Each structure stands twice: as C-alpha cells, then as structure tokens.
Image (cartoon, rainbow, N blue to C red; front, side):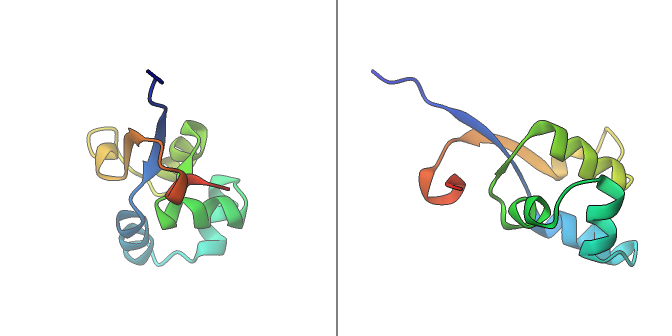
Length: 84
C-alpha cells in the first residue's frame, strides 16, 4: 500500500479578500512577500505551495497567528491540482 503524500495549499479567496482590504495589488504582495508572481498565482489558485511561501504571504498580509488557518490547509496530494 502506497503512503499518501501531503501538501500545503492556500485559500485564494482569503488572500484576495485581504488584498482588497489592504488595497494591495498582486505585484505589491509578491514584492512584499519576496516571492515570484508565478508562486503567488499558485497560492491564489489553491495549488500546492511551500510552507515558507505561506509564512511569507501571511506575514505580508499582516495575518495574525490566531487567524492563519483561515488562509491555508494541509491536504492530500492531488496530481490534477498540484502538478507543476
């Protein structure tokens, strides 16, 4: 039996909602989080991203630790969603 792989994904709606609240563009967020636009797009699309990316985005958006689970989840790997 093959062991399931886990990935971390972000909730795109939560990201874009917070960006609207802060009047922040995708370029602003990518620059502040020090990530590439393609990585930001993966996060907004709900595809798998690294934990470091989640931390950078949450920090750039001013997300408090008590609310960070509203922005990301750990889930099973899904090749249809998570493929590069």
